[in-house]
Length: 249
Ligand code: 13P
Image (cartoon, rainbow, N blue to C red):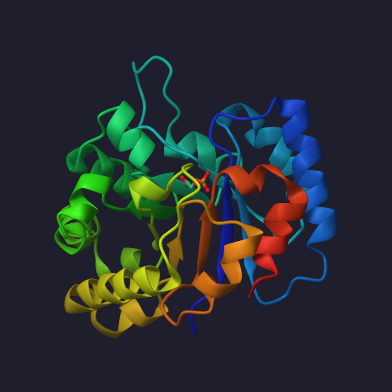
């Protein structure tokens, strides 16, 4: 059985005070949720305070990124060990914003994923095509390569800890979503790609959809058999919307 997950990627939003308020509301409003795992991914600066608020609750704590080196003279970076020392359980790796704006290559993402796993942190690995690639009908090939270049290079035991997020770049923050059918089609394809390498284990991998997921469209998208939840950007900054999305299961 795979776990249904709804994760909130706060990106570079909220002050620490606002973030603590947001997570407090999420904890309060999610008390009766039982069939879905909630995860919040606040900015680094909020992790300690948000972690304090969710300690002992069912809500999981994620970072949005980690360094590609273990330690040393890398000014401004935050290592996976530092995150683990704050009880961070998940880290988003390979978000399209990191790939595009910070030029994170597959090679860098592989280093990050290995370091996260070595620190006992589960990577939420993002893959997804841009608009030109979708229009050229290249989305399958693009996503396959993103997965092969990183996820295929970890061992089977580590693979069990990976969560995949399919995030079509054209749907992120644009208000456009993939249709439920488009999501199902590519999620099923991703699972097929994963099973070619990891066999039966791919059946247990949670594959999340991300890209303008809102209370109004989550139910239909999550109803598809290979969609195991969502990675939510904008709507995760509002506790009511975030919980409404989680209640779509
Ligand atoms: P939006 O939900 O704002 O489109 O963002 C999706 C996303 O990038 C989550 O990581």
